Image 1 (cartoon, rainbow, N blue to C red):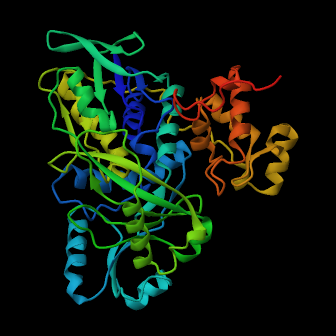
Image 2: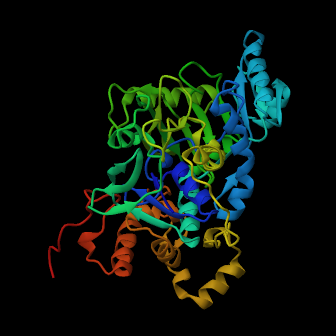
Image 3: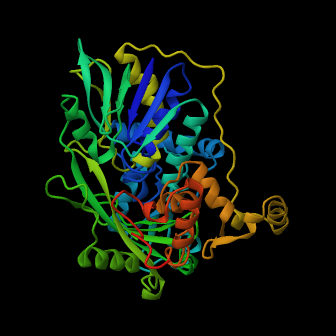
Length: 480
């Protein structure tokens, strides 16, 4: 038997990994040049507690469960998780009932480590929080991670367990017989045998379902704009800081990042029509992000700390819940769509839910393997190692001593390892190593990374791309 998982984001990659626990061949197909480059790479990177999700929704059932799975998952797949905790802040007693409602929701959803704190404790937890806030809901289980590394590490684990990863190719439909899919067709002309098809295509889940003649709820895209601040801003904030949520979402936040920076945002604007290419930022959106950050943490809106702005999309439906179902039209087609917030947090629980609860509805009975390997080897970062360990590594491999990215202290060996793990573009290396994530945003290291890619892949420099086929860097030599 063979399963085809469509979409190499955090959800699709974790589903593919979960399937490799069983005696079934697994193929993960991603249309981008690397894993985790869609919805997964542009979000708040938060592991939510689960107190905001309406009880009895799939979001509520899977968020707290997923949160509790991340510690072990991060140990197995070697991606970072920091349990910073989070605070939802309120000004006066008139807003206190809204915090109490969130507390009640959280208890019903099985969230642990929840309590309401008053101003003195709030100030001890966050000394730079605005004096306007007198109460907060503290959630100790909340945290932060690197979503793209969850997906990339999962895909590495899939490969090491015998699964196949296909990137830079797109599912365009399939051949069906007697109400079941027999083959999945790719844009390149390849055909994949398919006993099971799982559609986890992010913002494109409706388009993929339609290509198989499957009806799903209409996708609605919501855009969020962010500003990334320099690591100097981290001195002002210890935890994830939320305002009181609204009907539009959890609001514009102040969020520490795992590598020491700070995110402000996001906005939450529903896009008219289906425009998945619209990841533009706007003057109005970025001003609102700045103002909201300053409202929560006075002094954090410092123009000298701006590193970059960006926007990400998230898919949802009118039901505002995850859509995880076997198709009525096809016996062996499952859609895992509308994975809006808290989709990252819920992702490990979604993968388990799909494989153990939904796959049996297709008539497939999975048998566990006795040789599944749950862990991958640590990819060492010299920035995080002792001087003695770095010296040992340089003695074995001098390329550890050649620093490619000065901002984040990334060595040539780390870049080479990223390429061996599957990076084929400058951004592929960037997301796997953090080379280019620093203050200069790749201004000094991108050319070196491109040359290493060309050398290791045995390509001409003109063939190396930033992130997709259209994003060329150099076209030709101007002199010999």
